[in-house]
Length: 118
Image 1 (cartoon, rainbow, N blue to C red):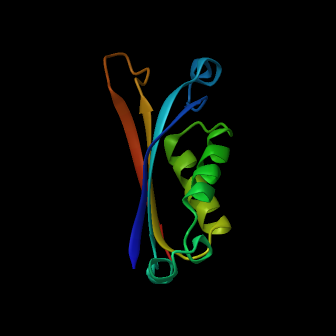
Image 2: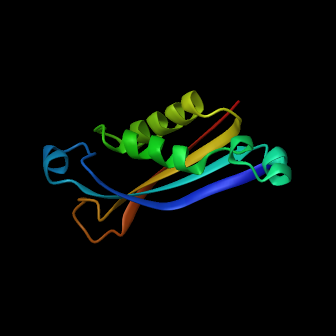
């Protein structure tokens, strides 16, 4: 078993409960952790035997384009899309962070982490 992590994916998107957030947008960071069998890829050095990180990134990027009111919903959509479109995932977690959230004070970020396993 192995762990693939894609950290600090940055997107400008329009997720949020308030109408202003869906118009003005905000910066989001996504951290992804995927547990998968890496034995074959470690032996063959062939991308066809590996979980393709580029495909995982593209799945996240596509989900970031579709608005969600809640970070929990966005994180669940990302997990669902990963499991639907990538084979070989045993367990995955996604952390969605909204930078400088409009909560009435100086806040670096607010984050939600969801996990799913087979």
